[in-house]
Length: 370
Image (cartoon, rainbow, N blue to C red; front, top):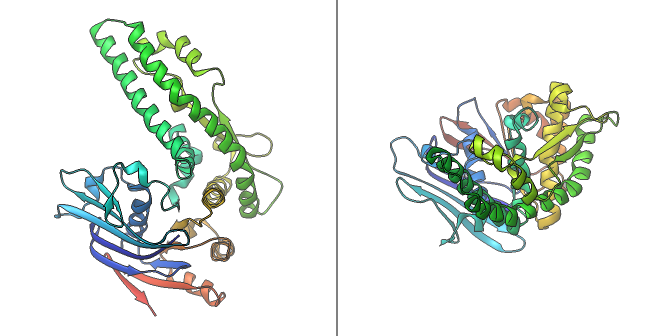
């Protein structure tokens, strides 16, 4: 999948932008705050129908405007040429379109344009709460399995309804076992599928992850591992056993929404507690590169790879190795940002065969170099 042209209107810091991209490595260079990351976020929007950084859509409208529009012209070996559009007008539902035809639901678009974002925030996958790790796993699976995404959406709706019921019954000082059981059945209908699909994902994903972690860490001494932490009892039994706890806590205390994924080094030492900063960064980067490989294996199409200011987290040798890797035939189109023009140029000078375009970003204006 190749993003050939990106057009923005009133998106974040940009009033207007129209950028022609190459099919391999595209570099956006500029100072912090110049608007580089906003360009990557626009590409992210066109894949996931939302921002990678700000979940409130209306806050991504350029100040003083009443709408934003993002358009991407894509070429795909399967489907040929297509145009994705994401449009939001103040006070109206967000619209996602493919070749000007709107989707009935936003979820229909997920997986159409496979994409992986690597950002400085990725270390929070290691150090943050379980919700971040679940979202990472759910996003990876959802891009290749629409049935999983449907089950996830229905599960979350049922969970919301059950939690609302628990809160209402607490406020009204009434307990209705039969009403709770209705939502238990809905959670089980969709939750068991989530369990099984996550188990299968970790089994397929861990070998891909270990390959990239070995490459990044440069050593066999500390292989990383991923474990799926969940209650393996039938979900209905879990929900039944926890009803009294749920009654008094006023929310659902068990189920797939409480699962976690444990990241460890070779001696089963939890990375979150015992890993160094370098190990955590390497682990997080390996997770994202493995996600790329997972999507490629299942789609048969190379995802777009976004690299946001990650070079400040790596030494120059590792930067060169990463550019050589993502610029190889193994990967596809790459969009990256950096604050040091000399660093990027020196790398490309050593790789004259690598197709690339360099853009300068200043005050939300983009200029192609050369």
